[in-house]
Image 1 (cartoon, rainbow, N blue to C red):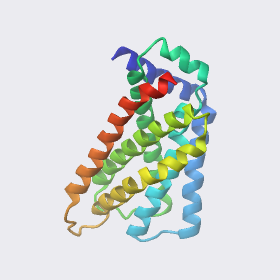
Image 2: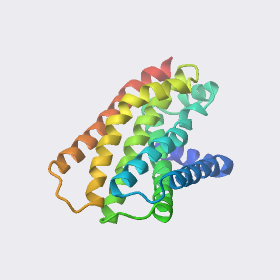
Image 3: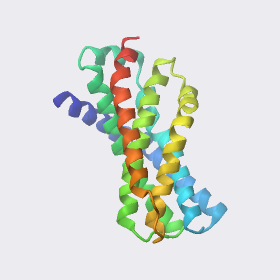
Length: 216
């Protein structure tokens, strides 16, 4: 576990030292929410929910995608001499989850300030946002690893990510409706279970396939 936490700490320290990158992502979040506010004002609950998760998709693409794309190929060879590939991909996933959860809190705060607060159960929406951050982080981290090994092709990540992220966003949007409306929603727990199962499958696939990508 020591190499795992050391790698996570290394990524967090690099992110903190390169504040221009972190502030750039925060600026992107703020400008995106402000543009949404200028175009839609304060929409009703379902529209507010859809806009929030669409914003999270673009934030995840910009914040998490760089986790592998910013690494030089020579640095991958150096890491290969230090840690196992499973530890490396696990550390990247944990770092991406932490970063995206932070961005989700900032987005939610800005949404509530600018676009109103239609939430009935705030704590439930926070939990769903945390699970959503985990889901988007693991998917885009794995896709970033693939894109990084394919000649740093960021467009490949977007092409592969769309069919994978679309069902995740639909499930998250439906789950979050329970925090906006008091209306009974049948099958809510089944959707939550499906989402968690998808997260587990993506993590397992990443842990299994990344060692083969590492050797290329």
